[in-house]
Length: 108
Image (cartoon, rainbow, N blue to C red):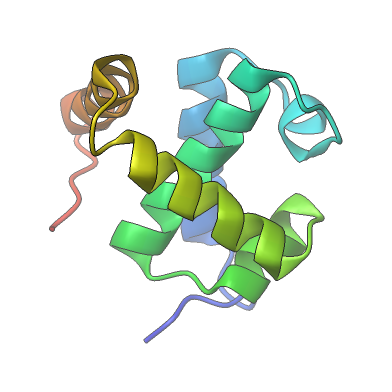
């Protein structure tokens, strides 16, 4: 089952965790900024929502005020970096560790 915006509570919880982890506001994350760090934070949200919450690209697009193909590109790009970039791997692993410390666990 895919999450739709009829059940936004889980997406809201994940989004709030990303905001806490990155220090960015909702306005910045949902805004049009193309600053690398902001795009990475947005991509982190989308990656976790897709992998662990099975959110659809259109639902994530509506949530972040973007076209679903932009979400697809964000996820694919971040997954590509996770194949070889140690800094990105550490960034994602640290976020997952923070979630685990708060008692939020994702099954692979």
